[in-house]
Length: 303
Image 1: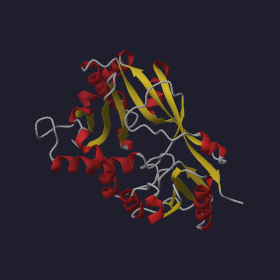
Image 2: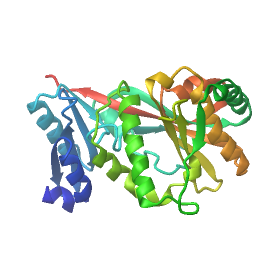
Image 3: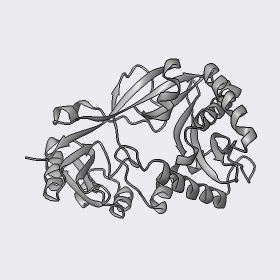
Image 4: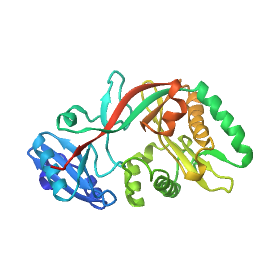
């Protein structure tokens, strides 16, 4: 562990990962690598934070195989809640906030192949806003609501209100993403630690909540502003409970974000890091421009 930290590994991140999974670090001089097996995915090994030589990656793969993992996935630190996805390009547009930048070529050379595909797309407002308004007109009379998060200290959230939000985000995420590719649950404390670096950047007007007719929160959409230039709205995470799916609420949620972007003079928004089967891709594939593609890669560990 000390050698991995000396090679640039983060002791804070490692301490968090060790609470969630069986984790081992590898280092040789400036080269380092991290391997992990999450208890919810005992046959799957995660390999991430690979910097430098092939030797540390080979050691990590051997360690995973010794512990019963039949496949290794990379780049992935423990599970898909933490850094994962390699960047496939194209690279003719600037990167945005929190975008994965891990090159894919070294993983392909090491025998890994894409197992899941993702993309980021630039989406214009007009047609999407029309569809969103239609969904609102149908659902609002039934008691459904989509509203931005209410601030309680001017334009900011108090610590208590923020903590309440994280509890809701955790609950909804565990329900909504349970059937997502490579999903592994994490406890509330781990999710809170993951989001904490973003707390100061959180704009309550860019967090949208879905309220069911009985007043329960059943979904959310989390957005950030990418500083630019040009300034862009980033749609990051959308979650809906099962009972709220298929009603048009995704249209309404995404439309609310686009309406906010339009009101701030942004000509479009970026729908970020979507899985190829995501709701976002199904909603408007005909009116978007994909600017980047990504992959989570996999390699068999069976000899």
